[in-house]
Amino acid sequence: MIHRAPRELGHLAAAAAATVAAATVLAVGHLVAVFVAPAASPFFVLGATVVDNTPKWLKDSAIRWFGANDKLALAISMGAVMVVAASLLGELARRRFALAAGGLTVLGVIVAFLALRRPSATFWFAVPALAGTLAGVAALTVLFVSFSGSEPEPATGPSRRGFLLALGGVTAGVVAAGVAGRYLATRLRDIAADRAAFLLPRVAKPAPPVSAEMDLPVQGITPFVTDADEFYRVDTALQLPSLTRGEWRLRIHGMVEREIRLDYDELLSRDAVESVITLTCVSNEVGGDLLGTARWTGYRLADLLAEAGPSRDADMVLSRSIDGFTASTPLAALTGNQDALLAVAMNGEALPVAHGYPARMIVPGLYGYVSATKWVVDLEVTRFDRTEAYWTRRGWAPTAPIKTASRIDVPAAFATLPAGEVVVAGVAWAQGRGIRAVEVQVDDGAWQEATLAEAYSIDTWRQWTWRWDASPGTHSLRVRATDATGYIQTDERVPPFPDGSTGHHSRVVTIR
Ligand SMILES: Nc1nc2c(c(=O)[nH]1)N[C@H]1C(S)=C(S)[C@@H](COP(=O)(O)O)O[C@H]1N2
Ligand SMILES: [Mo]
Image 1 (cartoon, rainbow, N blue to C red):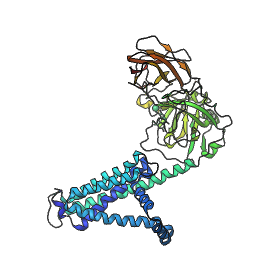
Image 2: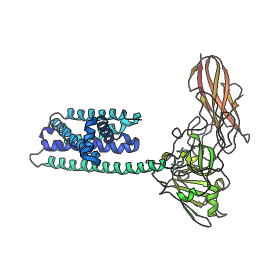
Image 3: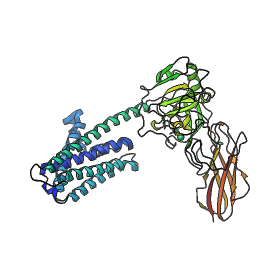
Image 4: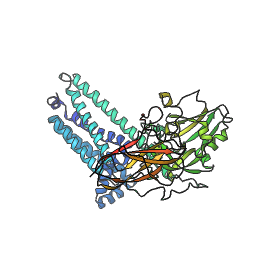
């Protein structure tokens, strides 16, 4: 097998195989980087490392010699170095395949380390080079095995044909990965530039500010407003849609008096509004963190729908995203709520691509799967008895108001704390109704009234805190909320399917 036959692979063939394997590292790494961290592409990492470490005199001469083509000159010289290095690797593989594979791995790991040293690197930066290296070693192995795999016959036997086939196949794969990576990278860069050029629309009446009384100074409590990059993300997109503002269109049609088509500039000519809303996922388990609060800027869906004139017989709006996701929202939840938005900004900045850039829906009081379509491009006014949406077709409830719920943020689960005063705190939510009270229970004791932070609105969560005089032992803390209708959060445990989980969140802590 591998240990014998490689010696039979010619010098040129071995060099070609190793060069293709090295190219695999770069191309696959580049493709993976598009999704993980574009700046961590092995191409850019090697290029930037070379540029950063080129002595000034050489850099200056390169610019003098090659002028605007200095990047091209850099690419060509790096390519030449790679071919030479790969040929040496191929030669090594002919003699000791394992050593060559190990050598390629070491080179890949070095590139991963270089990636980690790039500015603003996170640990993700190591991933593209490592993924590329895996693919490269696999390519090297396939190429050498293809030669030696079948019964080696002399001269132009099947082994040679196998090798040429494999070489052609892997090369085609490398080219495809390279082209895909390049194409996707430019597409995503377009979006980044498009987002960067976004200007927050002027709002006639800004949403009331979040005051200190709404955001308690308790260590470890969930902040009232969630940072965009901390905001939970739930969607079916394997690859984020990339839709520029220039490309974006919204069509409102179906059971309407007149169909409407809007582009982004036409949207901007309307009055923008702002509203602070807590978005919640139906999949949130008791105690889970699939919810967050943001200040959303956008345009009233009620106004946009009014322009189209929905028919009296309609009772639902089927919203569709550019990637085919759909949500069915009760028409009344959109026309009857001034805070149901076609949002374009989150916390004062363009929506992040992952949160629906350039436009998404935000509807207070309803779980996201029936209301919060990201990358939305189409609103069809229709009826619940005519069609279904992405998740409702899969058995999730067609009407899905957010259930009254509460969560303990501090102390942490299974924390060990000194006896005496312990601060217990968290958040509670019942969008559309508001939170009236929160109570905490220790073990089987009586329910104790927590102190509520000031409410922002009925459509946002509300922080709460309770001071506990804790005695030694292992204790269980439990929380329940009462909403403004007087409904007390049930302790009946039900899973998220089909219309949201219920049950009390509890935490066990040890007091010393
Ligand atoms: N296009 C699209 N929009 C979508 C979804 C989706 O899968 N695709 N998921 C929905 C669900 S289930 C939720 S809970 C919210 C989550 O929004 P976020 O990712 O901005 O937090 O988006 C909604 N909008
Ligand atoms: Mo969701």
